[in-house]
Amino acid sequence: MTTTDFAKWLAIGTGVGIEIGSLDLVVTVVRLRPSGARVLGELTISHFREQPAAEWGATYTAFLQKLGVGHLAATILLPLRSPAAAAVRRRLESERGRRADPSALKKSDA
Image (cartoon, rainbow, N blue to C red; front, side):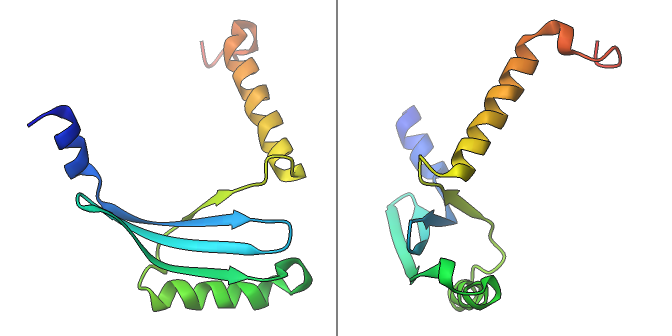
């Protein structure tokens, strides 16, 4: 068995992804098995910014429960130029800078 074959057999799981678009949320549930990936379902929540979060959140929750994956956490894809993505990028850069600077360590960390 090659490393590639072994990795293929480890590729087992189910995931939820959310793409945040300018107008819509697109939720995709995928099951991954050694034989390949299969989309279990996809939900588009149109004009989600114009709806109360409780309303589209209930739709999202019902969709996940219908597919039997209500217990899973989601991976979110932010638009590259969104304010949220910029905030995450700044935070990551700040964290990297702090780790790279030995003088930033607290005495208790040393």
